[in-house]
Length: 568
Image (tube, rainbow, N blue to C red):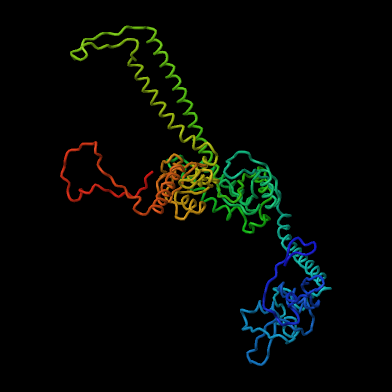
């Protein structure tokens, strides 16, 4: 419909089949005003409008009309006996269409939906999941009150569920003493630790996110051996076990005789002791939710020092020992590089001294006779020729420079902490730069300015993206540089590189394509104006050129050649 009065835009009108119902079809009823030559929509009663709105919103009509039979669209189905007919409104019928074999009601039959009936309890909820239709009055005057009532009911239920969860954590928090913790970033080793005092586990995660400056909320906590911590009680129990194991290990080191397999025996001893700690030193009543069974003096002794943890946003644990080892190796490489550079400077300085002494001496060259008739005299020695010591020193300098370049290559790869972590653990880093490359593409024979961007991780993926973005008739198969050099390897493609895309033809510039189009146009124009024989070219021997006589075979006696090319 066109807009009228102060409307910003017009409204869509759907042409549909007329439904001969008294109610529920107010959207099909119009009023024609002859004076203003216009139509007025929804020209019907208030009851008809309410039932139409209920059907459109998917609400049972019995919540709008209470215990009143109304002529409206609906469905019905027969009982197993075949005598009793149950009638439903549109919303209830749509929700039960898969369960019952419903049939559409004919117009002119007033009824009340079975969902609003007090006798039929099986349909009490209708299209709702929890609320009963009889308890939801959505008529014009009561709809606002009903909505406010159920909003308050939902809010009270949410509060009750929250209060039911809080006492469990609250009782644990009352018995749980605040724990001093040193938090580190996962993958950062022992650098930039933050001292945090927390009484509950959610408080610990919140403080770790804030003080460590994490980009996302902290979700996982690890100890130095990679144990995942789910509560503060688990953290305290782990600290108790670790203190007992460390104490027993020190006693065993003092009493034990040194043997070649010292490290393996200590590791096996730690594993056995960790299994025995909970059974002997920790009482059976101690669980992961409470620490009531542990001696208070022992607990205070263990919790006197902060417990080190590593906080993660969901990434796997990265051992701080492996990071320390990688940093140690990197430091050794740097020392090795400094030593090589110092030795190289010393050798180069010595090389300059030897050359200066040789030039300053200005010793003349020796003339040595030679039996070779082509060169009877050979010049040897002199201040222009390098000495044997200089030659050996130059070879040593080259060897040292090659060794220095070999040392610098792994250091360049391990500059970032993430790469150091990858080398230390033998796995991929936490954050990787994507391998996809963005390039600027244009059609073969076109202008680079008419191109667009394309992305890909491999050449095949880039060719597929080029075909779709350039809307090519045939799939792209070849890539060229703007100079016409073909691209065969993914390593030859750089980011934001300009690439020419072809469907299989050779590289051609825009000027060459224009010339080719002109040749084809001239060819077609000549054949159209002068006939198909106009493009045939006859090649004859010129009279001025004297050629020796030759016998021509039957296949070469005709000096004419037909060339399918126009004359330019």
